[in-house]
Length: 180
Image (cartoon, rainbow, N blue to C red; front, side, top):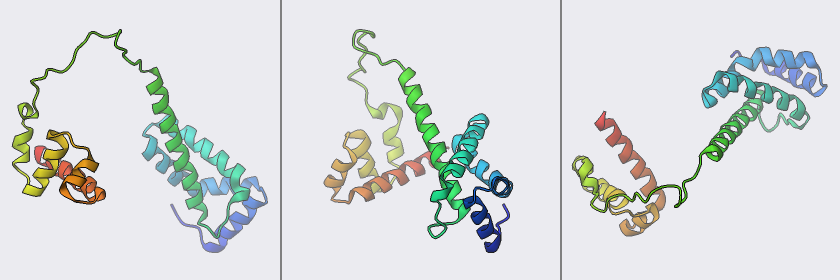
């Protein structure tokens, strides 16, 4: 994407405020590919990305009178519109899919509780924990083997909750890399 010179961007903004449709065409030629690519990276589906792109351009055009160049660049404003619409579409899609998934009530399914003899040791978790340092091992032991919540683990270890969350994520990522 070639960035417009500040005076050309100001002219484009002025023309868009004047509701000049050729300015919209110029905006699309200038920023359309980058905008589409960003939307596609979020939705990962060509048809959906095209739909979101069309909605983005329409919303951009309709909401343009509210655009304030003092608050941000033109492209950044359009990009935020596109990103938010893409996220809305993903959320809506997940919601629809969740609604189509039937829940199992107690009467629909036979009573199949997990066996009481299941222990995480049976799948090698303890072996992986041996690869960790004592502090990391203690944290994962609390979270995954003893069933503590992150808040409970933070209280037990006398650590801030954010530290527990970030350490747990780092440890899991490192273990996943080690397993590959």
